[in-house]
Length: 307
Image (cartoon, rainbow, N blue to C red; front, side, top):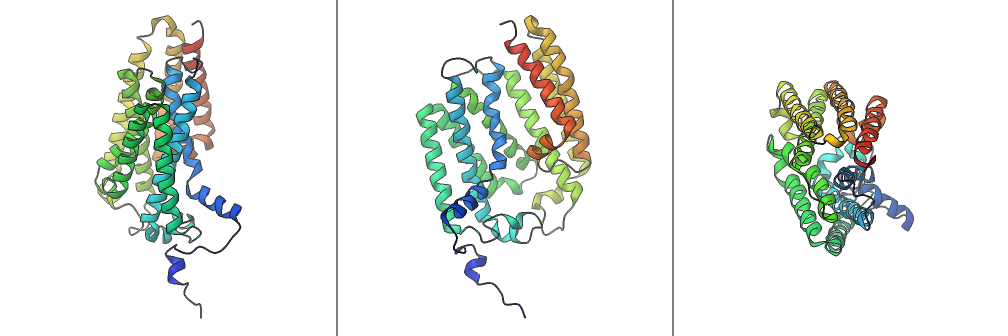
């Protein structure tokens, strides 16, 4: 007869002994480095403003990226400590270090606090405004973990706010003005991605006791409408912005095509239930990746060619 694992080990308070390097590897994995690609949004404002090559801007953007990686990793650690019991019975999340007992709760909390404090300190050293944005990001993500993820619609808006704050961080760190078009496209794009993630989760329909509590209160039709509305508003805002730049209308006008095709392709993949991990889907799907590259080249052409 199999013997039950010790309760202390199941609770993650005592991880098996291992070499320091392996322990560090486990901690890094718990920080979810694959999610750090989302923090590349700090590049959006400096690139759109054509300021990435200005003196000191690249350094500040790199600093903002590091700050957000530290703060986001802190929230992931805190979230995984809180959700460790649920994660242990989830088919995918049970391999997370805290749920699997590879990383103790005490170590995870200590690392999370250290990352949060160090991240905010670094942000303040770059500019006080970035520290304020970082504190706002922590407040949004932590409150989402504690409360908002149980509230329909608000959970989507809270996650979308995290994306917007990432983009805002890049502008604040470099003292670059963010236009209303930039804010609208970023906000609507974020809502589009989060709604697509919810649609894919609802489409998959895992065992009811394992799925998000709010998921049962969403409908596929409602999420499709949300996707369509967010994509439409993002498209209108982007097209409106492009036509306010007559000096580079050819580049920006051409960039509209891959932008719209990208939204359509992503919506199609979401409809098939493949959008649960946006950062993985964009890199895995060749069409999305190609459209991203084409759009990026055209957009940067409009920003930098013929300045």
